[in-house]
Image (cartoon, rainbow, N blue to C red; front, top):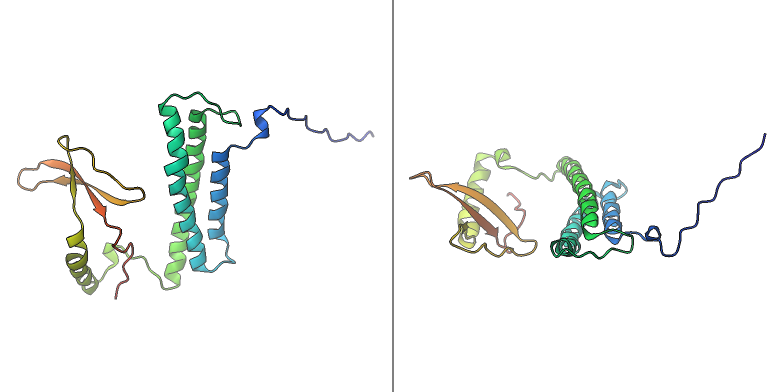
Amino acid sequence: MNEQLPVSPAPIAMESPARYINRERSWLGFNMRVLEEARNLSHPLLERLRFLSISGNNLDEFYMVRVAGLVGQVRERLTEISDDGLTAAEQLEQVRTLAADLMAEQDRRWHQLKAELAEAGIVISQGDDLSAPEKAWMDQLFLEQILPVVTPIAIDPAHPFPFIPNRGFIICLHLKRRKDGFHMNALLPIPQQLDRFIRLP
């Protein structure tokens, strides 16, 4: 019986785009590896939470810089091809698919870590979870420390769309006026000096 020798792959030409790795896809792959550390049970629980946070911050920056650049190229109808042979539109389509997978995995990791945090005595409470005394304490905190520093901004044709800072935390509202049922939209920017999480007494 004749044994067949393995066939060597054909050499890739020096000018072939197949010699290159797309930098946007590569970056998303790197950030997925960062997120994988949030699954690594050899790390302490809060360290795994920190890896999840890092992957989220990285993705924010990726969209602000890399994706914004691709969107700008598509908007300007630039025809330049990347070293790996893709147009900006093709890169953007691939990025959106990979980023959607990454964000879905971030959500899965957060739900798992939130459950582990609860087992360790760190509970992220929702409004319905609070007792009457806790709700009263939160009401007082809102009136004294939060309400004085927040300012709703109406969105209507008479005013330009308000500036939204990068990585700002904004609540979008659809409001209905009680006296006549008039509907309007508004934004509620949350000032950075307010804590993202509040520890209940």
